[in-house]
Amino acid sequence: MIVESTVVGISAIVGAGIGFFVAKKMDAANYEVHVEQAKAKAKAIEHEAELVLKNSNIKVKEAELAAREQYEDKVISCKKEHSEKMLELEKKEEHYKEELKKINKEKSELGNIQKEAKELYAEGTKLKEEYTIKVQEALNVLEKSAGLTQLEAKELVLKKVEEQSRSEIAHIVRKYEEEAKQDVRRRVNYILAQATSRFAGDFAAERLINVVNIKNDELKGRIIGKEGRNIKALEMLLGVDIIIDDTPNAIILSSFNLYRRAVATKVIELLVEDGRIQPARIEAIYEKVKEEFDKGLIEEGQNILMDLGLTKVHPEIVKLIGRLKFRASYGQNALGHSLEVAHLAGIIAAECGGDEMLARRAGILHDIGKALTHDFPGSHVDLGADICKRYKEKDAVINAIYAHHGHEEPTSVESAAVCAADTLSAARPGARREVLEAFLKRVKSIEEIATDKDGIKQAYAINAGREVRVIANAKLVNDDEAVLLAKEIAKEIEEKVQYPGEIKVNVIREVRSIDFAR
Image (cartoon, rainbow, N blue to C red; front, side, top):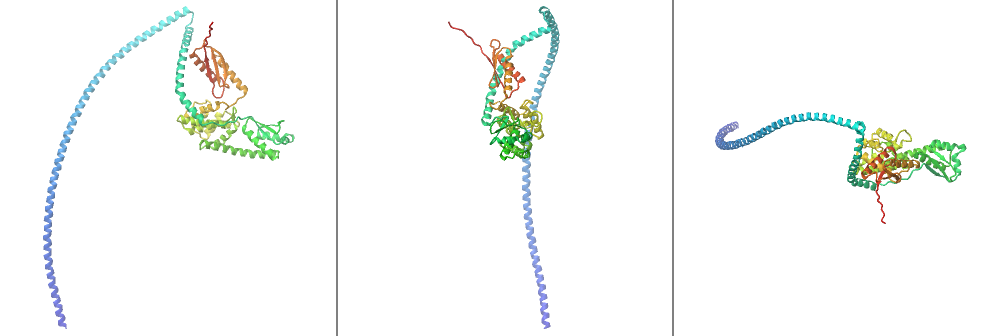
């Protein structure tokens, strides 16, 4: 058993050794094959590399040849361009040399001219001195012969020259006036037509009294009260005059302040309706009505601004706009007037290329100072400008406030539009009314100014004092002088007469020739 195991082990060892040597021989044979294959591949790669290198050398030579040809072409082109530039520079140099010669020649001639001018100036100065001496001698002779001093003679000559030139000046003025009128008439008519056709406001004439209707005359005694205590309390609190007379079923409230009259009317209406009339009740009703009116003023102002499309207005100014409803000028409601001016100014500014909304803002605020004139001293122009400055309104608005009464010149299209719109609104027929006495004085002054002029036969103020018709003496005044007379009369009216709107001066010159056939 042991012997068999030993034999098997030896056999295994021998077999393993033989296998090892056989494997080693086979590996050696495979290695040599791989080496040969590697050598063959190396030779093939080396051959390919030689071909690539050869091709690369050829391409390099071709590129070098092309670059050399391009370089030579560029050199030839640059030489040609250089030659042309040099030729051009030579031509310019020759031209500049010729110009320099001309300049030197002209400089020399200029020197000669300056020399001659100096000589002529010296000669002219000498002649002027001689002329002055001769003139003085002539004046002395004239003074002795005419019996006039030099100053008197000068005044006489100037007067004659002025008389002779007056006709020529009048003719020139008339000519250029006609040309200007023809140029602007169409444009102005278009703007006015647009403005007046787009807006028309409704106005009601404001009065100095309000009438409160009562059911029966017994209430008059209750309003007067015991020993007049109720009516005294009412007048003191409301700031109006209460007139109780024989007019049936009516009580009259009188005050120049529309706001006070409106508040007083409402207070008395509520007291009459309530029936309890005594001082404490009067004060309570008054406070309630005044609070409602203040709220109404703000709402009125806000509605007006909303209708105009305006925003960012200070609340105090909004309240003042509403208060304009209770102010009037020459019988024209201030709020209605301001609204009309705002609409017209917006339309005019838009047509003239300005800011329509800014013109509306300036228009509604141009008379804002009238809401303060009952409470503060000063003109409505200064009060309005101060309040707008305080609340940071734009410069165009402030300028419009000053300009619409001539305190400043308009500095923008918008402020000029407000001035034009203010004149249109105030001057339209029926917009304003005046006291009869003041109206008669104004009309008389206008006629006297016209008749005081030389060559005027008659003068008539017509069209409610908005036009003066002047009849000139045809023998003393010609057509051109009539133009100057119209301007002189208009200027004097502007300086001496106060009036709303404008006054048309119409100078008429007529020649009549009469003969009889017998």
